[in-house]
Length: 176
Image (cartoon, rainbow, N blue to C red):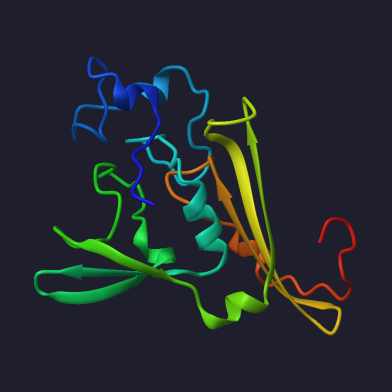
């Protein structure tokens, strides 16, 4: 969940990178664009978030629990990752010095039917070119709710919220 970006400009210390060195610029914007964000980026950073786990957790509306010297707290995953904006170096809403102690799924997650799919350049040990986690609430053969999260395409796991109001009246038969 706290993986750093795989952007080649982030790891290349000779390239300007606002995520690594705020205010230095983003070489990726004018450079090679392969594997950079197409959603949720800004004029300051186009790096993608690499976590597969975070994409699946986003589809389940997970909550991140943490502890600091001052006490405990929790942050819904939907608010955990910060928008890139003009401060790509600030990635999460965790307080300074916080330690993640748990990731909780709502009780309703047990009743959801879900799938995760990942497209990548090689068969194993590769970051997602694009990934999708989908969770369906199906009762009495009717899809009541759809939750879709995308990975490999944005600065954080991207919830496709426009799919949420969808109220299908038939059960999808292929692969579910």
